[in-house]
Image 1 (cartoon, one colour):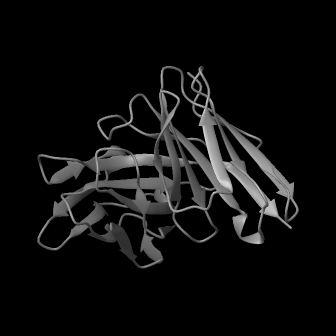
Image 2 (cartoon, rainbow over the protein chains, first blue to last red):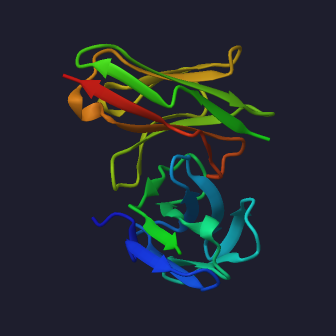
Length: 114
Length: 113
């Protein structure tokens, strides 16, 4: 079975632009979470979606938004990019939204903002 | 608010030696605790997790961790290091049963031949 897939793998943008990152969860998984990993730091929670509804949001500005589609895939959108948005963005999926389930991470999208 | 402190950003051991990676957490409620491993250019892989029950948790690849409430610690150990264990290791905590994880800054493990 395919794991969590993210696209694109790498992306270069300039300040002020908008970016959309995509994530396809493992088949049968209904929960998708997004994390931001800045170089040298641990991942930081951005969003959790379950059954197409937002179930949790981390401490990120409104420039960050996400949605989950009927097929459970997800998009993360970031508007008005800042240099500080440069990071590895990780998507993770699980069958349910609780820790009873195992969380699987994708390999991430490396975003560079110039 | 929950937080995680990983002592030592870089740990170096010899092949066959004991691996000990330290993690202390702060949580206002009984926590859910996790260790993840990240290999270069890859996502995170779950090594083990503590939710409830037995405080000594066994994970994959010979790793284990012990939840010590009195010390607010969840240190990761492996009796004998292998070259393939070289990677970055992250401790994480959640105060709820949902996957809203707070990660530590990570510990880079180097294994010397």
